Amino acid sequence: MQHFNINNLNKIFDNRIRVGIMSVLSVNNVLSFNDLKELLQLTDGNLATHLKTLEDNGYISVKKGFIGRKTNTTYNITEQGRKAFQEHLDALEKIIRQMK
Amino acid sequence: MQHFNINNLNKIFDNRIRVGIMSVLSVNNVLSFNDLKELLQLTDGNLATHLKTLEDNGYISVKKGFIGRKTNTTYNITEQGRKAFQEHLDALEKIIRQMK
Image (cartoon, rainbow over all chains, first blue to last red; front, side, top):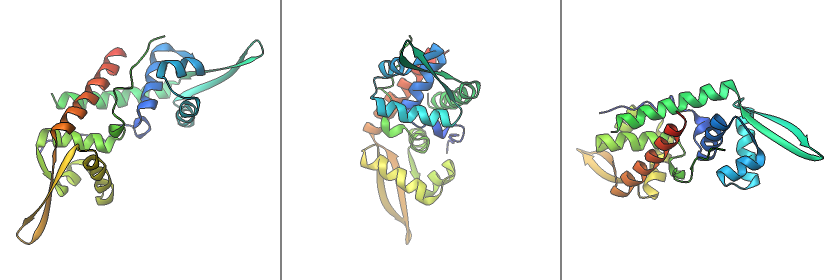
């Protein structure tokens, strides 16, 4: 029997929307709520929920600012988030390689 | 802004236990409940729930048999399951490649 190690897969990334958020923040550095919404084609509520989970886990940080009188909230990935996401992708890559 | 396509990620595989089940069934063909439990190091209830979800989606098939007087339930991946899982892994691989 061939064994696969799923214990290195991160439970927080058991969700394709969270995978999407981490992916776009990994390469784009800082993004606004609207950028994220557009890039991932999500509704406000759905996006907000998953951003909150990632923030609560210390994987992204949130900065509330203003452009003129309009609020402008931006998001970026933390060092901890970058490390955790990379480990998750490495574990996935190992599983994918084992199956080829 | 760099875009990532998360729409080709399959919602059913938004769970590392289901990823694990599909992975081990992909390479081992037929496995019993106890084989799966051992390979993935899960409790009975946890494993049963996820097997049911995969079965309900037509991704695995279940065969109830006997060894002597003891029940022996075996699981294998369906053609539909193999295809869906492969598409999911291909989509993941694309995301991983975009990030390198």
